[in-house]
Amino acid sequence: MVHPVRKGRVGVGMVKASKRKTRTPSATPSPSGEGRGRKRRFLPHAQDTDSTQVQGQPLPTAGKVSKPRLSSLRAERLTIAIDGPSGAGKSTVARCLARRLGYVYIDTGAMYRSLALRAQERGISPEDELALSPLALSLRIHFITEGEQTHVFCEGEDITEAIRTPEISRLASSISKQKGVRQALVQMQREMGKKGGVVLEGRDIGTVVFPNADVKFYLDADSHERIRRRYSEMVEKGVKVNFKETQEELLQRDHNDTHRVHSPLKKATDAVFIDSTHRTVEEVVGEMIRVIEERFKSDE
Ligand code: DC
Image (cartoon, rainbow, N blue to C red):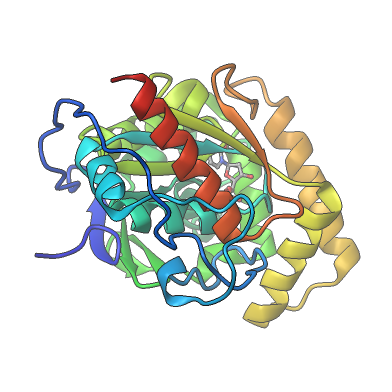
């Protein structure tokens, strides 16, 4: 059977999640070595190795969740929302969390980026809501996650690299303020996640897309650290950028994403705030699993 995260295809109407089960009590937690790892810096869209593959001392806040408990979380088929600004580490953490739980990972930012790319190819202005909304409705986007990489396909074309340029980042942020665009993509995201067993990351997942998500996180980091991560990501990819440009672009996007009229980025009142500034990927994912487990325990 195809693993939904390691090698899974997800698109509208494509999520093959098993029927959601009734919550079942779980056993007492026991340290199992989960969460042990070398300290991995955040590099969004870069490696997110299994924490079980790495060596070292257990980290202070890393999740110590026994395998049986992880499998009971897997069986829950929860809907997990992760929101936050650019460079907070959402993609890396969400993909890693989805893998640990055996869930499907949905990168909603990639959907806005896909629309931005198609609009750019057609010469459609980011202000032209009348042209953007039907284009958004017509998009056929799906994701295939293989190991550490999530490929984004639009109408069957692999656009994974094409949507990660600074220009598409700017355009995506700009088109995402249009109400019609948001309505179309939110509908698509709800369709993708409707069966549960999903980790969705974006800006409005916990506030608009799935306001009843089982667990919500708001992931943030100091802006200098977020700029550093974004810059490293671009350099690693061989994209020609300078630090100042990256800084301006990220701060401008922060401003756009938090000040737009429709669904601005904000922490849902019931979201758990996590600051990733001085933490490794394993520490953040471990913390999330601990929170999910606690929530699950208190629901028994
Ligand atoms: O997460 P990202 O950097 O790939 O997102 C690109 C842009 O898409 C972001 O600047 C704002 C927009 N976006 C959004 O408005 N709502 C989402 N749920 C996800 C992304």
